[in-house]
Length: 292
Image (cartoon, rainbow, N blue to C red; front, side):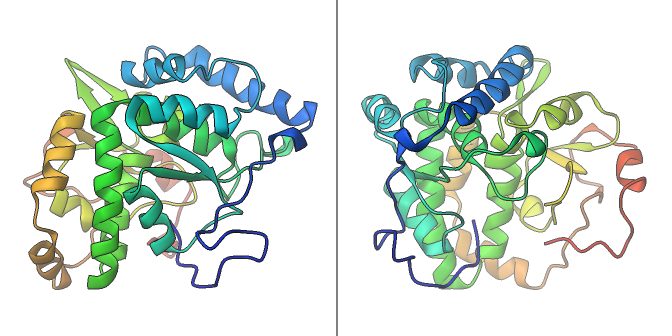
């Protein structure tokens, strides 16, 4: 999501979409995708939700090279009614929400360089497609993403986008899920990152807390490094149910007077899976580092 307010670029349609121009990718571009894909595919099966790995197979994303959005959309449409559309970069909030509400997932089309193998500021096609699209083949998660887009359009009218953005961040991007006795990854920001795929489950530094909608929407988040707290959902079905059944208007009203919570805060009522040491963060950040 973003806070861009300009009109669509001249090269884009009114809804900010552009052609993927798949034929313009170089052999080096495809090789970069394959390098990133192979690295994540080797480490994720014991860490990520099975539904993610199923999505890779269902959508035939194991095929070498950057996926063709047209072919990917055909498979995804048959499965859950979603499409993948290219955009020139970050898009305005309303555009983002409208696409989600209409089952269109927006993605950048550029691929990172070898120098950006482990970190880049703006999401590239690997983060957007590898990280997000496999779970769009799962019907319940696909419904959640549409519901989020519809909620985003309502939040914009209420001036509450910043609150709702935290829900996206701590679920779609950096969410964990409890499956049996284990915690698993599902957030795209984690599963597309080699380092955070390890850190989010194995490192003693971050807190891992049970999902609570109101508490989560009060909590700041890191945009520049690994998270200091992760929230754990019980199931995709429960996440969808809470999103659909909650009346967000009174929730936003109640949050207006509630102070934001720092990323390492622990509340007495928190369900704690892991009480983190915060050792990693203490070595990286000062109190002056600002968070959204």
